[in-house]
Image (cartoon, rainbow, N blue to C red):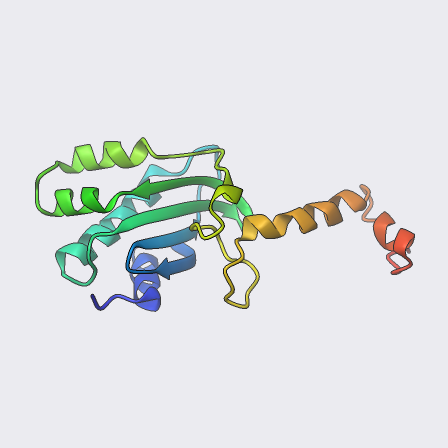
Length: 169
């Protein structure tokens, strides 16, 4: 295997994926990407491009088949959906034991539009803390949501006033 996180991110970007984060380990690949179609469900075209990138790398011998866990983001910290590919599905499609249609159907069956992000803290969520630590962006949003709730409609920061941190006009 010669594909590292930087190389994989470059391959995904070359295939039109707006990569937010990529993690590669011997057991799995975790990809978070920002969608261009922020509806309720992930865009099948984007899912296909992520899958095709992985298939191409497996066929080229650049990476061994492994589980791929993907998170589609509407924007940083806002998860649209999660989905995954099992390692044996990658092995099967690249060795022609299953068709591309069967492979696609299996992947589409994994889509979760209301994922429980707290269930797997090491999952493929966008890592928004910027310092490279494994803190998923979804976990960072609780504090952000509390900050947003403390602001009223005109941007007035009631929490900051209550704590004496300014925030008034």
